[in-house]
Image 1 (cartoon, rainbow, N blue to C red):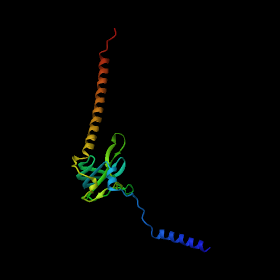
Image 2: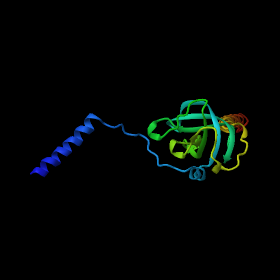
Image 3: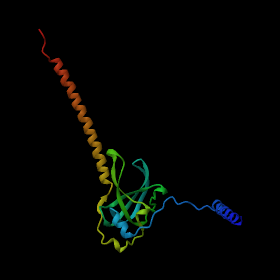
Image 4: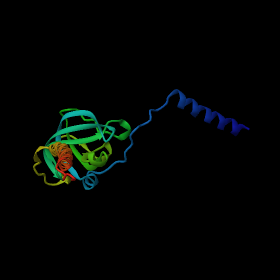
Length: 195
């Protein structure tokens, strides 16, 4: 009987402690990752300073677009003005750097959107091993220069091309339809008359 009372008292004390002093639940949990492994898993690795951070909708979901002024590239295709997408909510482990801060970013290409609006974008999260600070680890190896210009110029060009193509197709179909109507009308007017 005494053991039962002690067990009940222990359970009651634990329940009381949980109710009185609840610990906040972590929305994002990541396993630790070494810099070497982060570099191996990433498609692009670079050192850059955050110049802009803005929320947007990407593929129907909230995301944060981070723009970096890239100084060194360690892996992949990276532009001097590189845009990276990260989840906007804490549950998605989104990266939330301050504008002006310098980071070593480990990013991967992810297709966002559906159908013809699908785009390949570089994305990163807190779980990808990103490092704050301007001195990258030696394990990253020798750095190269980023490609000139902004990374989203290709996306803007593709969007412009898609709009232009759609306009030309609509215009071409309209001209063909009008030509067919004119041909039918002329054939009707110039048909041989029966005697």
